Image (cartoon, rainbow, N blue to C red; front, side, top):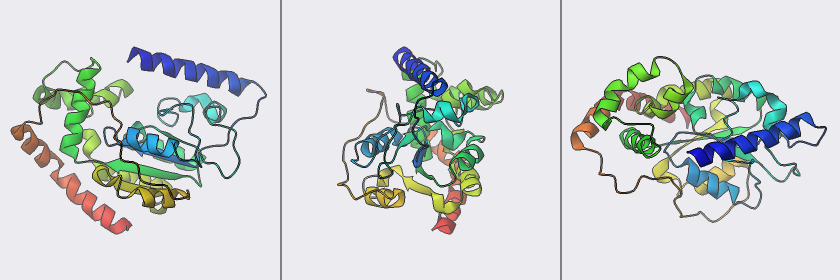
Length: 257
C-alpha cells in the first residue's frame, strides 16, 4: 500500500508540474473503465493498455472524478499522452461506479466518451473485497462482523471508509448503474459481467471504436492467496441481501439492450 501511495504521489506531482507550465497536454480520454472493484478491472485495463491503438494514462486509477475533482481539468489532462486522433487513451478507477458524485461530473466533462462497467456475482465480489482489505491491513474484523459493521462505517460518508469497507454496498449494481444511465445515457455505458470478459472482448473493442484484437486470456489481479472459500452461511446471507437489487438489475439490463 505504501508503494502504491508513493507511486500515486509522484504521478500527481508530475501532473501538477505539467499543468502549470505552458506545455502541450493530452486531450481528455475517449473512454473510462468505471468499475466495479474486484470485478476484473485490472485485467481489462491491461488488455486495453496493450492494444496498438491505445495509449493509457500515466496510471490505472487517477480518481479525478471522485477524489481529485478539485484539481481541475488541466491536472487531469496532464495524465494523458499527446496523441494523434487515431490513438485513444483511458484510465480505470473502480470507485467511479460507486461514488454517486462521479456520473454527472464525468458526463459533463466527457460528453462524447464511453464508459465500461464490469459486474460480478455480488457475494463473491463482497468476499474478494474483504480479503483485499485484510491483505492491505485495513480490515481486522472477521467477515461476518465486518458485514455487521458496514452500515455504521459508511454512515460518515468518508471516502476512505466507503472505499475500504463497502462490501455489500458496492454489490448493489442496479442503483449504481441507474445513476450512470441517467447521467451519460445508456448508449454510452457498456455493462459486462466479469465471467464474460474474454468472450465479450471483441464487443468491447467495437463499442470503443477500436480495431479488432485477439482476446487475451491472462487474469491480472491482486488476489489474496491461501484464503478459504466463502462460508456457505455467509453466502446465503449475502444472496438474500442482494436479491432485490439483483432482480432490479435483471430488469435494468434487459431494458438497456
